[in-house]
Image 1 (cartoon, one colour):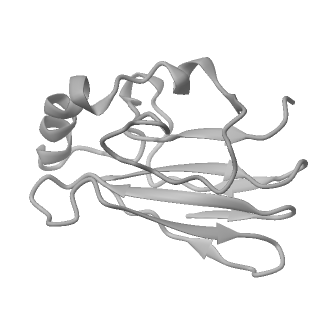
Image 2 (cartoon, helix red, strand yellow; image 1 turned 45 degrees about the vertical axis):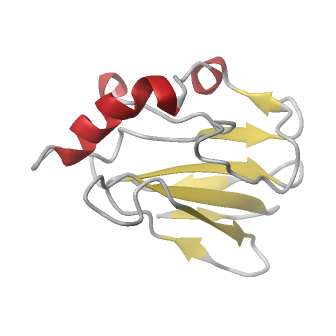
Length: 134
């Protein structure tokens, strides 16, 4: 579950279920305090967000305890995904900038997302990008 409490942001989700016809397809939604939307992001989906204004505060809940070693991610600018962000990405963490491109990581992603019974809430993200440092 992801929601915002102040300025708006754009959330992009990507399907990571290899057995699904929606594998690697994506969708986007804008969340803001004004539209009072939230989005549930199920297991085996990656998500990332781009803040649209300064001072954006996001809140997200996960179904499992945070496990840093279980994280993996996708690049926000991966050409295979072809994601369209509402504003140019100006600031992104080193960790999120250094995820492998799908061309190099897809086999590993397919294997991890196909594994039955694996807790997947920490395994994939698109990075969290903003327009201003800070």
